[in-house]
Image 1 (cartoon, rainbow, N blue to C red):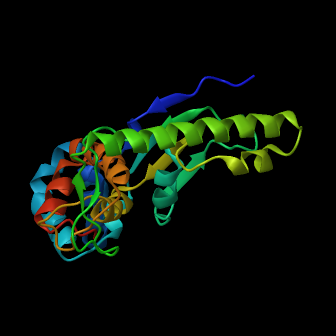
Image 2 (image 1 turned 180 degrees about the vertical axis):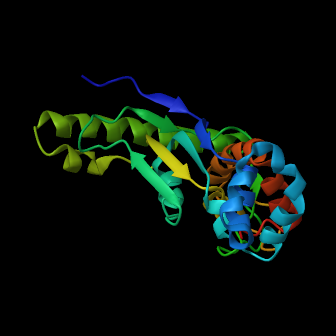
Length: 244
């Protein structure tokens, strides 16, 4: 029997845990000159007195001190977002739900009204820019196309499962608009590399033009960096959002 299809227009990013902070960046850097005395800098209260050191490390791209901390997120996003996110391999760990071992839930992505989607004049794939759709008929048609294709594909998926075939094969008819849940763990250095590519900041040293939905996810992760590592975050922005 066909399950009822659910439609979503958001990317859910839940910050689960965070280890370390600015003080660990300082402690990791201090070991090169202080040896065992670097242990004294693991006190979070000492981070602020070393604001200049963190900025120096960022500016001159001494990156390894930013690897001695970690953040874990649980993310629910469409497969087309994961295709881009999984390209970030260095410093990232992933564990994703598997269509080989569970029946995938019928949850599919629909864009919100106002999502930039119309190509600008002179559009270039290397620098993709889009405008908000001013024609409601276009958005309605797009949404109708997606709803219809999702319904058909999931019905075929269920029929494939009923045949008793390998679930990993049965899912082959499903589109990239279906949602998938995944654990994501990274360190501040890898997250900054991620943010530099997956957010659009006109004043960044290297301006990026990310997929809209990918940027929504990246911005949610950025909030965790800003709150948990404020000195690191400030230095990241002050130095053109270039990962060290």
